[in-house]
Image (cartoon, rainbow, N blue to C red; front, side, top):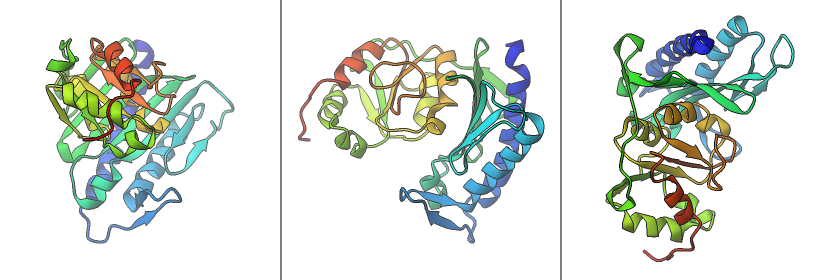
Length: 270
């Protein structure tokens, strides 16, 4: 942990800044929202948070690159290196602009292609989750009120609480039948979406979370938290880490079974 202590401390400082900006704009009557080229929304809070975090990183980590959802990649001022901060200023922007309190800032540090620090801060929920490689995973309002978290011990799909984002993406990727088959066989299923399902998984409140299409900034911060809590995090092809463009996150015990089922044809009709 000593290797990443300063980086994790900085991630909390970044999160404090993000929380201050985003909380002030949440449910603001003058919130400005535009559509990006991919037709997803972006608010003035998204851009303000990312600009502020980039400014802090430019001062404190000039040797590190930065990747953010709104402004892309900025190479390190000190030249190419292996470290990169990955930022999603507001994960759950659609919730944010509609006044739903389930949104968060996601902050990760990657070394090469591996996320080694992850922090998720959800100020409207009054909760934060964080982890660093070899350190374990924690949750609480802040570091002084932290509790270690771990995944559940559920070992059968029939006993599992299963989470997903929505069904449209699974239909677009040709796996809707497999998803519907899984939903029929689980003890309970809910579509919490975005970061929240992964954090509930890391806390042991549910047992699996899956999404068919994601960007690096959507998942980089989540991987250390889930894995340090004892879970597994791969793409749909079973490759570990955040780079595969999809996510299957479980309490580890259900992972192989879910990967197999998500590759099966299933039944398309409800």
